[in-house]
Amino acid sequence: MSTPTLTHDDGVAVLDLGDGENRFSPDWMVSVASLLDEAIASPSSVLVTTASSKIWSNGLDLEWVQANPTEFQPYVSRAQRVMARFLEAPMPTVAAIGGHAFAAGAMLSLCHDQRVMR
Image (tube, rainbow, N blue to C red; front, side):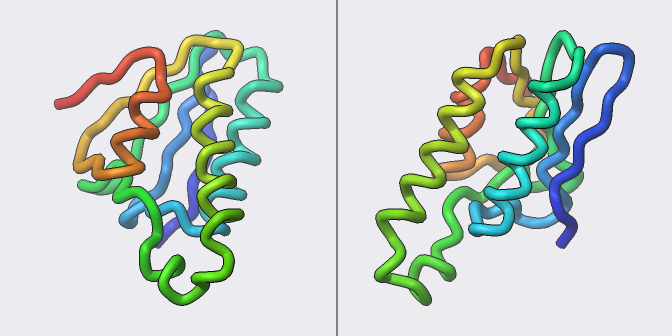
């Protein structure tokens, strides 16, 4: 599983969620939030969120939740903050969904201004 990455191409910031299941693990959410900060700070005119695998995002990391039941509320709050950051982004956002988007992953796609699916 790779970590999310950010690239820039002619005024477009491309946030690649990764090539795995792109579940909302705590580390994954920190990485996405950090890259989103970087994209917002850049002179990009648009943000496109994509993924390198057949899964755009499988949503919450239920295995992590089951292993850490006392951390559920802070975990959900963190996931909500990540989604809110996309809603508040100061540039247009596009979810380029080239694969499955389930549960909270589908909700994350709805936090973008536009969604495109193949």
